[in-house]
Length: 368
Image 1 (spheres, rainbow, N blue to C red):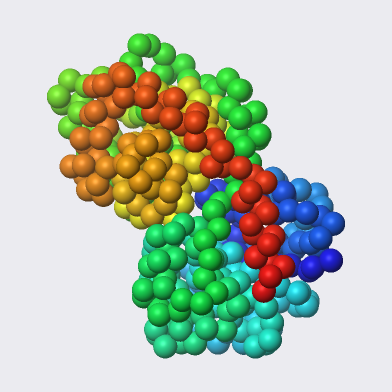
Image 2 (image 1 turned 90 degrees about the horizontal axis):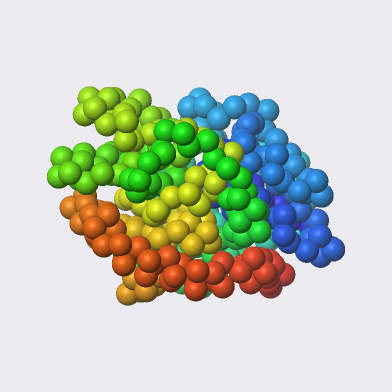
């Protein structure tokens, strides 16, 4: 039995937290004794953990003061403060605070660093204060995992670390996504003949919702009729709602906040938009594809791996506001394109095999 620890800030509503829950819930309980530990308290994904998964929760909510504390304290002191037991393998599942804590473990301790976004470099440097300290800590890890090829290629280029780097795709709970999608969403305000467009994610700058709203205004001004639902919560909510109100788009664009079941909304949408400036391997795009929903996405990390290098399974556009506008306009104007990508999404379902993604992680853990 291999004792393994997955450490992350909390189990909030983000995609990385959700795919961790999916992963540990499907790992072989006869081979692995799994502990999920959070540095801070709280998180809506906690309730989704299988009862056989041991969970250790931090005592304090995630606040600015707590993050500053972790930035100021040396890795070894952080490790002694947060990790009280011995594990055969420890995984810093989200880059940043967890990476620094586990970096303070004894040199012989087997440890894995997991990178979930193109912005990993800035996040890591903010916790280690200097590139030198960051590099010293990263070289102590026995493996570095990226959730897409783009991330790992970037990591190798930026750090010069080429050995013991791996790509491991996210685990999606396909059965649960499909089951929950069959529930009836509360959509009385979306009745009518107009297309319904959906997007899901934290309301942060990296998700590009500010430029998506500008794209929508431009399309509305041109006479394109559709409704957009944005599912997710975050610090940009007020500014986004202010823009919606200012431009009198409240009857067409709806900020629904966090939804425990976004899949019923996805399933009842005509297509999905990923407007992100940066990604790792978009969980929301993956879930839309699982449900056979056509996708238009900016060219971010992981997009080509999910949607195909030549947009075989979904439409990939340049990572600019203008390119996003052109892509959304095509979907609204070309009915056959929607049908083409709906069929393509259905063909892509094998890419999201739970068994394959879980097995590849288990093999990595046992090999180091």
